[in-house]
Length: 61
Ligand SMILES: [Zn+2]
Image (cartoon, rainbow, N blue to C red; front, side, top):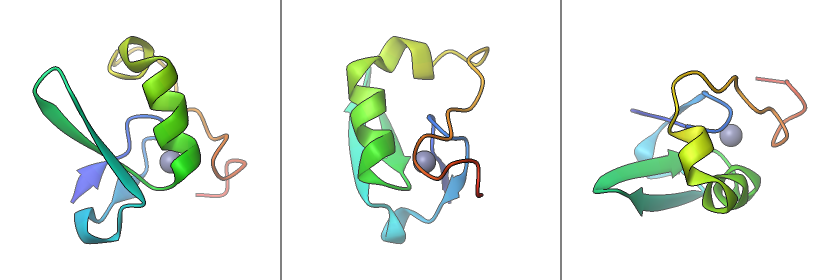
């Protein structure tokens, strides 16, 4: 199990829509939307203080 750094949802690694490596760590995403948001601002989403961004799901999960 991994945690989507953008929306903070738990993501099954096998089920992840996208993944990315950033600063030596592997990140998994629930959707391509989260992947795109992460790649645009990786520093923001690797910061623990950033609140979840539910653009991918409209807050539905
Ligand atoms: Zn997500």
